[in-house]
Image (cartoon, rainbow, N blue to C red; front, side, top):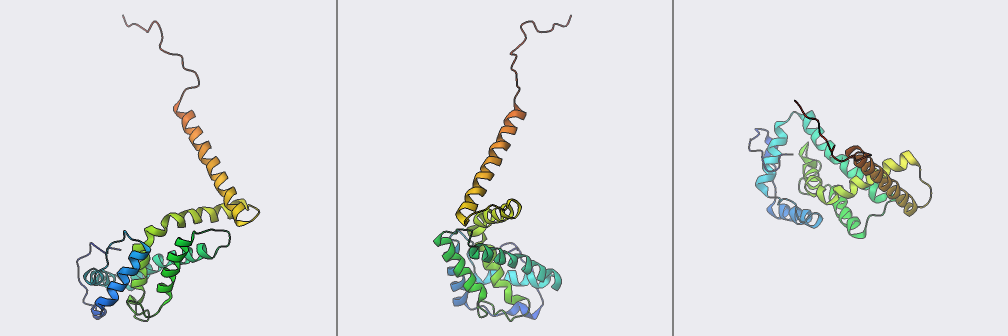
Length: 196
């Protein structure tokens, strides 16, 4: 989403949604609790994003929002999975994210047509770097679990996943070394060919 870059305007009356400076400041504070390095949220930027979204065809705009909201489902599955072990700090950040997403009366009320989920999506989008690495690992673990069906407790399944992934990396590195090297090093010929 072009949070920082879009400069157009929309003639849609929904673009005039009221954003309380206090609510925007609270949203920004929550965002920076989740991801301290996130871009700052300011009313002008939010209005630009609202204008951008309203210039899209409705179907495209809904698709933009829905694709990003799917990340929440992935994060919920990760947190609720008894075989995964998010550390307490990650679990606390996810809890704060879910609390905001599940509220109806947040920065933009969820009942607002189209725009009601924009603040939820923006929070997910801007905070995502704080969750992306663990979400990627969880996605890989879930794929491994589906394909390999490891047995045992969650700890044992994760240990098997890590062990097998490390073995795959070692094999991949070995193949790279083999492909980049020669089995026999003959040195340089003592009498190189001469052209006469």
